[in-house]
Image (tube, rainbow, N blue to C red; front, side, top):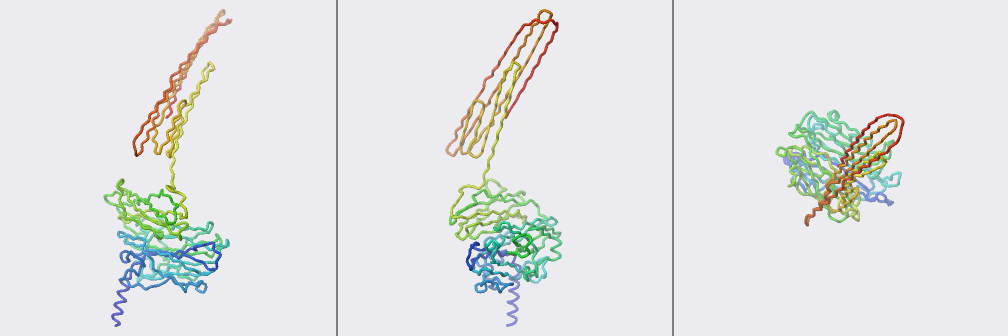
Length: 543
């Protein structure tokens, strides 16, 4: 009997090992301006697991029937005398699979549960367990444990509201390249504008009497590799093919001088050090141009694209997965674009529910076949009763204005002014071409406009011959001004799905030549001969 028990225990430990990749516990009041003494909050657990050790089903991890995992709940570990009724209805650690990757061997799970607690509640809850992967920085190599904690604080803020904790989550694992410094930004969002946000290393025995990290608290080896500045972590590893665990706390304070956090959220994740890959160029996720304001109970679809900058014959994009998901959001398989071999895409579908009104954040990462990861891409949707926009939240407008003005003044006091092309082109709906005499406006859904080039040439020659003698002086002065102005062709073409119409408008301005000759005779007493010739030619070309 004892031998059988030992065999079962050994089998349980072996099977149950190496399956946890980290996670976080967030919560938020459902109605933060409620004046009731009973406060409804939503607690959200988000975890990462090894796949297929953990199957992508509901009730992760116990849904994997051959893993003997105890049914446990989030436990109060500090200030339990002010837990506000939590112990009478504790929340189970079970979550539901939201995504997985066969190539990366990773599964993500999440679940949100509502619970009502008393106003003034202040206590710490935790999910504690064992069986991280084999880690280079764990306190023990024998089933290293974790302790993911969160401070539940329903004491009212100075503004009378219930505090809403920070929302933060980091994909686990993070992949870095050996002998390169990687920068990992901890994404943090906070609805309470003006709060002081801080990130710090988790502590085995924090100032609050809480074990925040179990066997993965900051060690000498981790400190030598990592640096935390604000909420940005830099990490440089000199050995490849090893795993490190990172444990951080993200906290918000009422101001910069406060020492008591209003909330404290654990962020725990793994870092895997890659050997130098064939292509170190990271893929890039293209930002959404869809409408980000959506209506409750109305299904929406949006497509995310990722660009591969490596040689596709050697390296491809294998995954585009969500790292911060939204409850009810589903994703298609990864699809290769038929129009651009460097692009892949995933289509997401979601029908927002009434309890999701407000801001909902979604984050993704793209990975190559060598596990080189993109920068995270996050987008925040706004769920409302009505739908404010119907097409797009991104607009692109191009405007080009070209203006040329030439003024020529002859010596006879005649002024000729020629104002050439002023062209305005706006890619949204309207294109206008304007000259001195012709204005053509074409308004279509899609507009193509050729540019107008105007050349203005002005030539001015002034010749003066003065012959004066003691008896007769003859002055002859000739002024010739030639102005040539030509406006070339402006062509506007319009193509729609029903046919093609092309319209060409040509405007030509004639050449005007003016010659003025003035002759006068006077009598002087001096004999002088003076000849002056002045020629000025100006050519202006505007495109």
